[in-house]
Image (cartoon, rainbow, N blue to C red; front, top):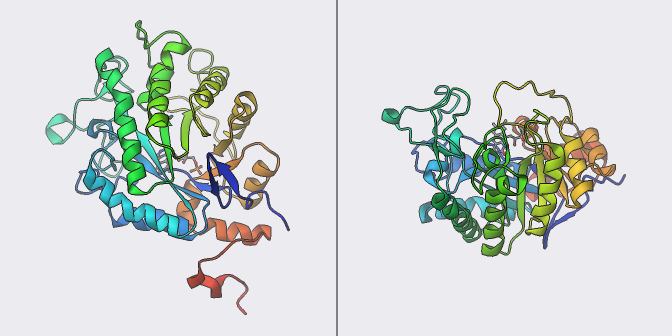
Length: 359
Ligand SMILES: Cc1cc2nc3c(=O)[nH]c(=O)nc-3n(C[C@H](O)[C@H](O)[C@H](O)COP(=O)(O)O)c2cc1C
């Protein structure tokens, strides 16, 4: 039986072996708090590559130390981090998956406790740091950030570009710019968090300035595929970032050199009731795919083989990103291919498990 999900797909000048891709998942597992990934990251990400994923995306990785969500985040601002990422990217690639990494700056949502240790901002005297944002307005009950100056904003694109170069040096095939979930770039895109009255705020062109400057800088720095993750809506329409605006942004991003769009939602406004349900964000991906003519990934409560197959076969999205279901079963693509009767290559070491029931 043929399967759309297990058909190869192009991203820029590369080809992924199938359309089941691993969505980025922060692990908050850098116990040394130096941004250097560890054996946890190798096993966590490596297991998904072994399990048959087409592309494996490493978690939100900070381009500068103050851009970390928590002190336990990974980073790509120095050579020690490049050296530690290298065997991880190499292992992912050796299993036949594309190795990708999400480049991030948390802005006013930085310097927080990881879930197992607490809630909200880490006080300065307990290892926290001063955060930055479009304005001094805090997110929810977090510590207020300092508003970025125009001079500081002009520096940020090169921080992302430098991290992208380091990603190439570490052996990654693809970089993703994190412009979603209420982190720094999204803080500038959304009128809910960006109330600046200079050239960085106001009109969509102004709110998009940081996003497009970062994208152009990354595009110019590397010749590997560049992907973008966005929140297509703030779920506060019409006051927040709207789907219509997001379609326009995606068109601009495509013109600025984005190869692929990874479509999520929300994160900038606290206390919003988001109508989560299976596939609840897929229609946003479809609208951007059709409106901006760019290949897209859909994400959010995609947990079943038939569900994922329909999304891709019906042209609602080019690929599916999966997060939590991959943690439940790192071998999800091997299982889904079996369920759909599709061809998939098992790791040679696991060939005796490739046919079941046992024979
Ligand atoms: C533990 C965990 C960590 C996450 N970390 C990130 C991240 O680093 N970057 C990101 O863009 N999204 C992150 N997300 C969101 C997921 O990538 C995904 O968009 C979301 O979980 C919905 O997909 P799912 O229903 O398949 O889990 C995280 C989600 C989880 C559960």
